[in-house]
Length: 68
Length: 137
Image (cartoon, rainbow over all chains, first blue to last red):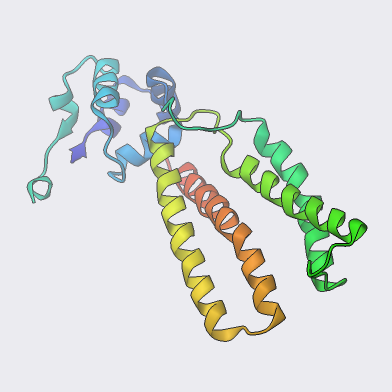
């Protein structure tokens, strides 16, 4: 699953730490999600999307490999 | 995650304070005094019990104390570290069984009891460090 959290962060000009604080997780977690090393739970994905005031589909997208 | 049985964050530092002297005492008993618990003598047994129990409690406190923010990713790192530590421990026990014989085999087995926790701590801290250091763009 790919995501554009890094781009969204750049648009609203917030750091990983600020996003982490907003959704109540560690900076490492945001880092791992951004780099595609960790797929967040539905709850966390919804929280991240709500910080950017967008739907989860706008932030997270399925890839071909996710269906295999 | 609220359902994990983790200790408060301050227990990590307290754990190191308990572990360090007890581990040094344990190593001293093994490598200097060559202590073996074959028969009961009060004073050596007391020293050995302090070393064994203190090392175990110290490692437990370090390994299973909460991070400042304990979330789902940190829990996944815990799981990853635990699996790798158990596999590593199994490999070491197999190698020790093949290579080491006699009294030293007993010492090795007694040390591997702690190795699984120690390996877990090292792998977990390394994982946390790895994700802390990535450059933020």
